[in-house]
Length: 176
Image (cartoon, rainbow, N blue to C red; front, side, top):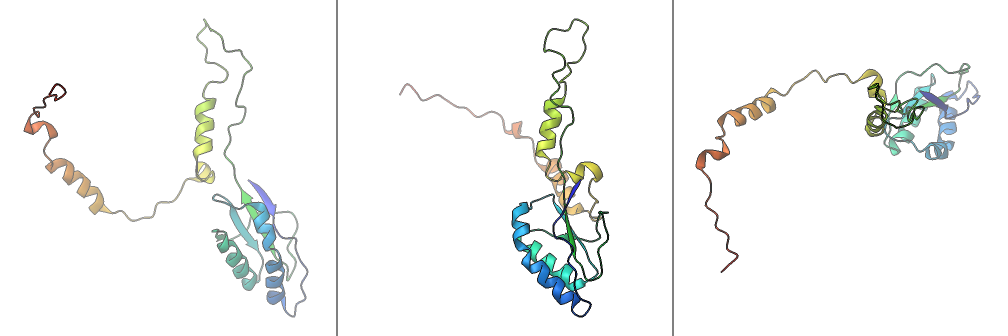
């Protein structure tokens, strides 16, 4: 995970902390556009001001993103009246691939090639939608739709096999 500090911490007077924090965030919309946020990116807001968090969530919503509760450990503390937004972007990759340390040649000792498995693992890494799923997986929803599952089983049990009616008589009609 490589966190990007999206907004520099801004000092805000205690009088209008939340209102000024919102103003600071509103001025930073171009930074969202510059990062090219997309699926798999995680946005965190490290601030005590709920109004600033709501404003960042509103801006993130325009990009189809959600603000995740909490914040990762980053260097430095966020001062009173300051807002820090952190974007974490994850990427799946296979370290050490491709590995051409041994030439692709006949191996009479029957050893695997040094590049063995790289293409499969690299393709899986390229196809995964959210790389964090490879680390943690996803929690189940806790509910199961038994009707859908039982309907498929019932259909399988009650439908007659396709070959029970015999074969159709088909005559080629090319010579008429």
